[in-house]
Length: 291
Ligand SMILES: [Zn+2]
Image 1: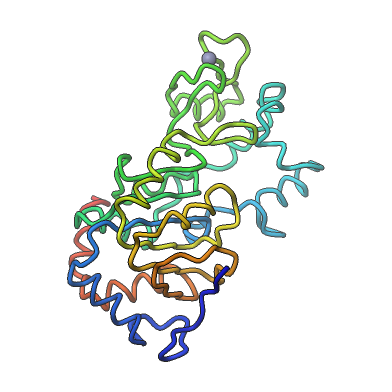
Image 2: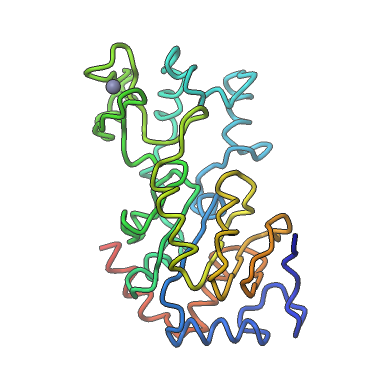
């Protein structure tokens, strides 16, 4: 096991470009030394966008379900067997949370910007909100490890359905059923307990070991398996950078040089953009995506 420690030179956790390792990373990034940057993202990005997380004591989804709906096991909402028996439960959640009303964060756009610059290898995310796609990240470069709410399918035969139609049904307190599977309700293509991870999770994880030369871990403490096994596939990566509120002490050691920036994702990413003198290009990119 290893620990992300303070910079050897300046003992700093969080000042981008404030130490020799930080300066080297910024220099390499700015000069285009990294050609295949892979990015692992998690709940930190979504909560920054205002989307409630699952497990926070008062504001998390499970806590709300417990308090407002009196649910004893709020994780039931994502149990496939319960979804088959009582789809109203999950449809009620869909009706309540409208992901369209949230906007991507600066960190989301930064990943889209890396793709536009031609240096994004892949973005693995644990988030299901699909904000990556609205920040200019293409479906080809994105792996939504736990699925996402931008598509719908039948959990039995896997036939694709129109997500907008599913949302309309949920808003009208109706359940959408599969045309071919009797009594099987349609759900967004998010991974419920009891479901397999999407094939692309396994297929594209080889990119990390075979192609990527720089890894960024943004807004995740990597607590959930198998996602937290991904970084050990990083032997070829020359630089690993963690941007998160807490260190990742539990992650196995890799051969990569590591930097740990402690704090809010957007503030640190903003600082990286500034240090690389990419502000104008980044703002132009962001405007082009939003228009
Ligand atoms: Zn079906």
